[in-house]
Image: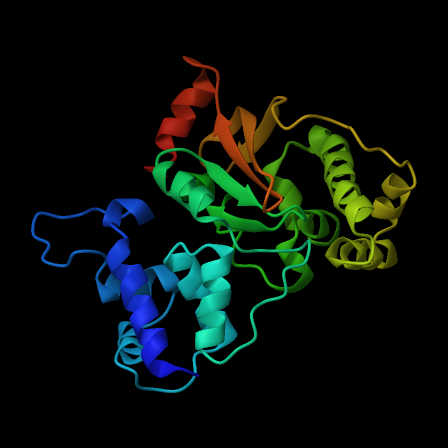
Length: 273
């Protein structure tokens, strides 16, 4: 672990960012040229004291989880993330087809969508980033899950509460869509993470196994109309516009409603909810 270089690197990246780059308000008085240490700590999901100790070349070796949080909070590129890990005494994460590190560009796009429901998905259906209106729409923070529950298709077939988000008559179609999505990832890398998800679902869900045997690959497009159920606002009819990051194999979904429709008014109310 190179404490001096690690501290210098973090300081340089922190000072290169402005509050607007990470979705923060600048405020009336600001002496710091870039981000404050406490702002980086919040973005990385760690205590201010812990982050201060790293920049002051004190404390123990940061864990890989802490480094991943710093890489996201500081909007590092993959090359910068790898450099960060090496400075901290860890091997750089292996760059397989599965990579859950959003690009800085996607992180900036999501930060700019503060008033719009939007989610950034990995190709395996894991939510990597989520706006606050999306949390309100979906009834919770979908980035909080661990294990196989991180993946949307797994929760759909294993955790029944996941289905409450959609009208019951839409459940068969939603299940086919989720299976088609994981099949696309499986076809690209059957021995990787998608293979692990499929194998687990074939073991525990007869419903998944039956749909899997259909070999459907093009069930519905993301921009087709979807219906969502909200506990307080009722049903919303929304369109999902995908924005692809081909280098990372990530997909950003932005939710919109027909202008002047009841669903558009309900989207405006999500912030209050």
